[in-house]
Structures are given as C-alpha cells and as structure tokens.
Amino acid sequence: MDTVTGTAGGVVDTVNNATGGATGGITDTIGQTVDQVLGGTLGELPTGTIDDLLGAAGLNGLNGANGQPGVTVLPDGTVVVDKRAPTTKVTVLNRNRTVGRSGRLSLRISSDEPSVVALVGTVKPGRAWHLSRRAAKRHSRKTIKIPKVVLAYRQAGALKLTIQFSGRAQRNIRQSFNSNMKLTLVAVDVARNQVTRKLSRVVKH
Image: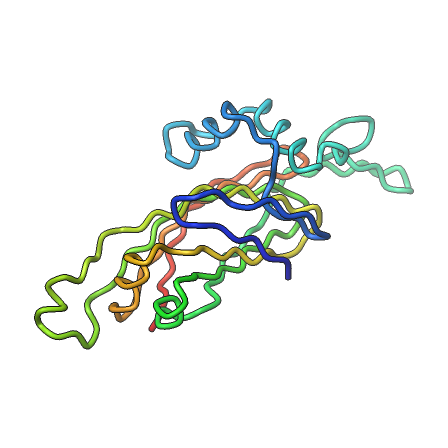
C-alpha cells in the first residue's frame, strides 16, 4: 500500500507510484471549487473542474470509447455505460494512544476504480484521561483541522494517508481517552460520476 504524508495545517507531498498519490498541478481556481463542494456551498463539481482534476491526476486518457467518458465497447459489440460513482472506504490504522505518542494519524483510503478523491476533516480530542486535576484543567478538546488532500487513483486500490500533528495537538490527543474524527469526501471517476460523503470515525484508545 502506497503512502502519502501531510501536516495538519500544511501541504501534502506529491508522490508517484502504481496506485497513485497526492495530485499535483491543481490551480487555485480548481482548488477553490473543490473547497466549495467540500464545504457544502456548492452542490457538486462542474464538468470542467472534473476534467481538470482528472488531467492533473494523469487520468484524462481514460475517457472511454470514441472519447466518450464512461463508455466501453465490448468485443461482442455490447456498449457499456458507467453511471456509478466510485466506492470509497476510510479505515483508521492506529489507536489514539499511538497517535498521542507519535503525533501521526494514519488512514487507509481506498477506491474501487480509477478516480480522484478529495477530502478535508477534523479531529477532536476526547475527555481527559488519567490526569491530575490541574493538568485536566489545561486539557483542550479544541478541534484540529485536517488539511485538504486530493488523491489520485490510477487503478483500484488503497493509499495510506499519514497526518502529522503539531506538538500541542499531539499532547491533547495523548491526554485523551478517545478522539473523534469527521471527514467530508468527494470522489469522481473517469466517467465524471461523482459522490460526496460525510464520515465519522472514533480513534479508539
């Protein structure tokens, strides 16, 4: 499984491998449109933005028979039209106590077809865990932002996304029993099918 690393509040590195990685070449205009969809102020990605995302991911050559997105002609002449959005899955790979020690939260994000997946999120530390009364008063449950990440899948598979937290955020997670993560995700395939999802996960102790 290929790995993409990033910093909470920072920029995700670009990687190139068989499955994919973080996409490069995304302009401010494309990024702003993706932000609007992830933020809920825009219902879905316009066709032009989808094509630009696919191009930045190196997927613009997979647009189907005769240049028609999502159209495949089988050897027997049957025409198959893809109208299904990508199926994605997010799995938390480490426990809260591990995140508290290392400062890194690892997620496995999979897609069942060539696609582009963009996501943002937050992590909220849970209740104080085994702290003195004085230390518990300093404990903060303020939400920590996970920056926007745009992942390219050149084939079906999974990418490991690792988020590095600041020292203060790491301490608050370390002092918590559990943490709660919320993600908003938009996925598009080479047939321009798209889906937006909201996910919640508990990073268990």
